[in-house]
Length: 243
Length: 243
Image (tube, rainbow over all chains, first blue to last red; front, side):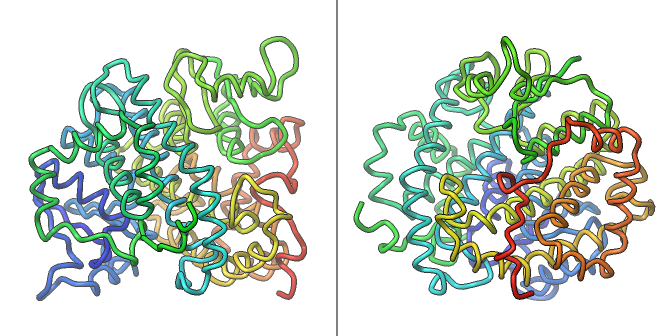
C-alpha cells in the first residue's frame, strides 16, 4: 500500500507525528503537498479539504489517504497505521492505553501551540504578543512540568520496563513523545536544559528513538523539515525571557 | 459490568459525554465523586488522579473504571464503551470514522472552553476577561461557523442518510454532538438562534437524540447536572454582547 499524506508543505506541524510513524514503519508514502509537478502540491491539499475527493470528509490536516480510505485526526491516523505496521501493541488493553497516551500528548501539543497563539490560530503571533507572554508564563510554570512529570511517571510505572511508554516495544506514542521533547528543546531551550535532570527516563526515550536506524536516516534527510517560527514549536526569545 | 465514572461532581464538563453514553447504553454505573458516604466523593477522584489505585495512570478526568481497567481521555473511553454497547458501528472503517468525528468534536469543545479561559485553565475567568472577549469574538466569527458548517456537511454527505453522523445508526459521536449543540445554545443563545436556519440537519440530530427514551429520562432526572458558569459552556452576557 502506497500512502498519501496531505499536510502543509513547509512545516513539521502535526503532520510530523504521521511522518515519523510512516518512516519508522518503512512505509512507502507520498508527501503530496511537498511534491512538485502534475497532480501534487498545495492545491491537492486544498481540494481534499474542500471535500472534492471521494472518501470521508476531513476537517483539517494531517490527512492520510490509504487506497480508497481517507483518514484524519492525528491520533486516529496513528492508531490505524500503528495497528497495521507493528507500532501498536497487539493486546486490546495496551492498544487503548497507547491511544490514551497519544491523546494526552495531543493535548500537550495543543497547549504548546497556544503559547504563541492564545487568541486565535487565524491571527499572527505579532497580533497577540502580550497574551502570548501571559500564556507562556503559565505554561512554563504550571502545565509543562505537570505534563513532563506525568510522562516520566508513566515510564517509571511501565511494568515491562525499558524505554517505552506502553508495553515492551516501541509504539507510535513513543515516536510522538520524541517529537515533543525535541520540539520543546527547540522552543524553550533554557527551561528544558534546567529541567533535564528531573526527566532521565524521558531523555532515555528521546535517545532511544533517535537511535532507531530508520528515524536516524530520516532526521538526516531532506524529508525532515527544520523547526521554524511557522510551526507548533517556536523559539521566541521574549517568551522565555527572564527565566 | 458495573462501571465507575470519576469526574468533578458539580459540573457537566467533559464527563457529560461519558454520562450520555452510559445512560443511552443502559449501563449500570456509579458517578463516584457525586455519591456521598464511605468510599465515595471527591477524595476518591483525587486518589485516582494521584495514581494510588491500580491500573494505568490517568492524566485528567473523566476516568472510567471497568473492572480492573482504568481508562481516560474522553474519546478513548467512548470508543471503548461504544464498541461494547452498540454505540459504535461494527465495520472497522466506520468505527474509525466515528472516532475521527469524536476527536473533531473534542477539538471544538476545547475551543469553546478557551473562549472563557484563553490564558490559563488554572486562573479564574475574571483574571482573563479582556483576552476572553478577544478570543470569543474570533471564535464566534470564525471558528463556530467553520465547525458547524463542517458537521452539517457531514450529515448531508452520510450515504446512509437519517439523522446520524456516521453510518445508519446512532453512535456516541451523535450523543456528543447533541451535548455540544445544547451547550452552545446555553452559552451563546443569540448567535445560535440566528444561525439556526443554516443548520437544519444538526437541529434534526439534536431533536432525535433528545427523543431517545433513555436520554429523555436522563435529562429529566437529577443525575443530569445543570449548565453553569463553572463548566465548559458558560453564558457570560458580555462575551456575546454587540452581536
